[in-house]
Length: 190
Image 1: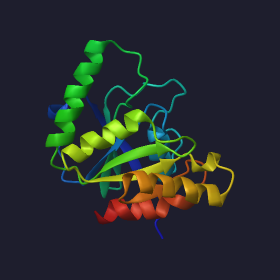
Image 2: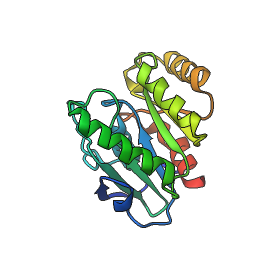
Image 3: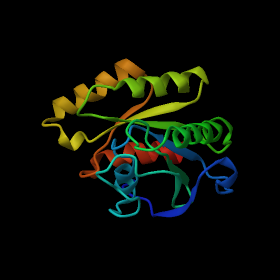
C-alpha cells in the first residue's frame, strides 16, 4: 500500500531552459488559481508546508519542481484565471508555459485539477481544448472533495467531470488521504 512518498522541493524555473535536468517522469499541474495545486502536492507528500499555499489567488509565478522519492516529479505551474499581473507579464507566462508543456520531454501526463465544489469553469474548458489541440496526454484530479457533504456527492462530482472530459479522473482530498493511493500508483507506474 502506497500512502506517501518522501518529497522535496527541487527548484523553481521561469522557462524551459531553466528546468532541472532529470530522467524522472514529470507531471505538470494545471488548474485555476486556488484550485488546490499546492495542497495536492502537500497532501500526496503528507507535508503541510512543502508547497506554499495561499488564500490569495495567483501566488505561484514560476514552475516549482517537487521530487517524490526519485520516482517522479510534480511541477506546480502558475494558475490560470485570477492572477493580478500586467498583460505583458501574463503574455510572458503564457509563452514560457506553452514552450515548457510542448517541448519538455520528461512530461508523461498533464494533470488538470478541477474544484469539486463548482461546475467546470470556462477557462478549465479552454485549457482542456488547448491540451486536446496538441493531443497531449492528460488526467484529471477533482480536488476539495472533503468539502462535499457525502460520498454520493463525491461520486456525482467525479462522474460529472468524467462525462465532460473523459479519461482518467481521480478524486482528491488534502484533508483525508484515503484518495492518495490510486493517484500515487498512477504516477509511479507511468
